[in-house]
Each structure stands twice: as structure tokens, then as C-alpha cells.
Image (cartoon, rainbow, N blue to C red):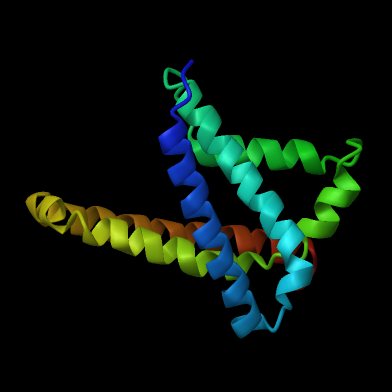
Amino acid sequence: MSLNFDRSLEYLKMLIVVGVLILIGQRLGYGIPILPALPGMVLVILISFLALTIKDSFPKLQFPAFAWASLTALILSMPFMPTADLFLKYTNEVNFLGTTTPILAFAGISVGNKIEKLKKLSWKVFIIAIAVFIGTYFGSAIVAHIVLKMQGII
């Protein structure tokens, strides 16, 4: 187990920048005031930082950082946990859709930086992507149909 201070500092800087972008995006896109959402964003940043730190500290564990973050948030929000009410009170002020814009922007930049590698994969990637898109679409439609049927909506 080793902790790289410089890398951790870079993670924290990146998370703060993303947090600020999310708060601005929420304000502009959804009209959510920044100050009430700030404590929730700080919690999200801290959980993300913890997840990245755990991932770096235990490199032999093949468990992604987002899974550590999800597990931490799940534990903190469980109804029987003393942290649940406070945790949910603050994090409910952070709009989920407001978080997607910076995340997708970073994903686009990441893919854009690897365009040469993508070119080498050839046309097979296109076929796989189409199959994944079609499968996801029909899978979602089937699940939605079953749920709506069970609720008597259709």
C-alpha cells in the first residue's frame, strides 16, 4: 500500500475543477443556486477523492474507482446509517444531469486523444458499436415495456 501525494493532489485539483463546472452547469441549466448545492458537491468530491485514493492504494485489487465511490455513497445513504439523513439532504441538492456535462466532456477529450489508436482498430469497432447500441436500445425498451405492463400503464 502506497500513497502518492503528488498524484493525490492532482486528483483533488481535477475533482475541484469538475465540481465547480458542475455547480456552474446546474446554475445555468437548471437554475439551482450554487450555495445550497455546495455542501453536496463537497461530499461528492470527497467521496470521489476517497475512491481514487483507495484505488491507488490497493493496485492489486481489480475494483474500479467508480465502484469504490458507489459503494461508499451507498453505505453512507443506507436508511439505518446515522449519516443517511444528512448525506441525502446535501447530495439531493446536486442534480445528476448537471454532473454529466463535464464528465462527458472529459470522456470526449480522452477519446479524442486516442484517435490514432482507434483508427488502427479498423471497421470492426463500428460493427461492435452498432451491435451494442442496438442491444442497449432493445434491452431498455424490453425492460421499460415489462415495468409499464406490471404497473398497468400499458
